[in-house]
Image (tube, rainbow, N blue to C red; front, top):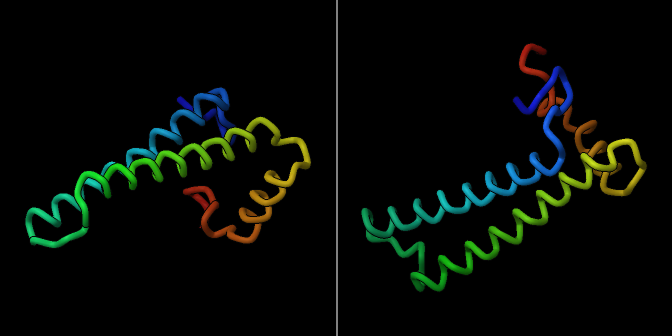
Length: 105
């Protein structure tokens, strides 16, 4: 539903919200992993418990905001020659293996 051919069909704000939620989900799953390791194997991954977990989630939120905002600006200014768009396009060009289509080899 988000794609039409090679282009995004959804508005940039929808992609931004989705990417923010995805990034937060990864952080939450990591916190669950830390908790499980502490409980099952007696490790000390959460160090100070709730304080450590909350700071990790706060930093996850900041990273998710920065990443999703960068993606939003890229999608909004795709035709412009802004510094962010230049960096992203340069990164994709230098890492073509990571960004080829699934049918390409």
